[in-house]
Length: 218
Image 1 (cartoon, helix red, strand yellow):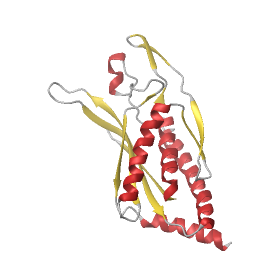
Image 2 (tube, rainbow, N blue to C red):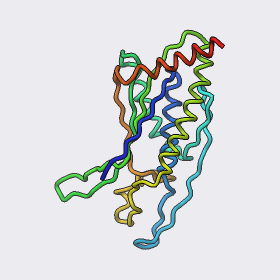
Image 3 (tube, helix red, strand yellow):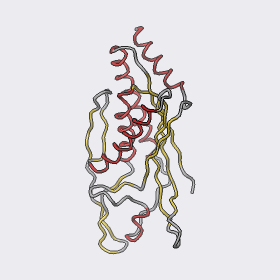
Image 4 (tube, helix red, strand yellow):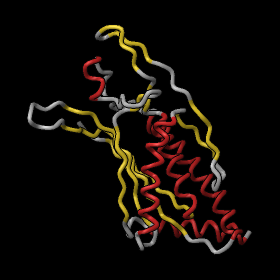
């Protein structure tokens, strides 16, 4: 199986890291989650509904839609919080990458553990910019909102392509495809990882600084 890989890049101020990552990760998971499966008998099931919720950002002029699941939100917030802390404590130029990997399990014979086979990976490269004053912060607030809007459209376009998705499982195999541990939603199996580096691409943060300077010059 070929694993699809998508890369997004964003440049943000330090206080915008949480909201930008939550907006993008929640957007992806909104399209990679279903309602809970209710099996009547093997091979026959109904799917529950998935509620949605609009979230207004505090430090970015942006509103995103997420699955209305506090459990899923806590999982994502925990991962994003750890990423932001690592980014802050790295002593580097504030550059890192957070990745959302979707996978399915392949059962292995005892005593071997199940094999996890990735089928889609989203990597978000993050550059943290330092701004000089409140005027620059206000411009950054607007520009980051515009960029996130573009990224969300890009995510939706990619997800709407007719490409591989794991086939709907039977009741005995549902845990090989979906995370069934949440009580109100059923996302595809996934994991969130991150790495901190100082060489992911200064060009993105340079572009953001240039955008701010060009706006100030108007």
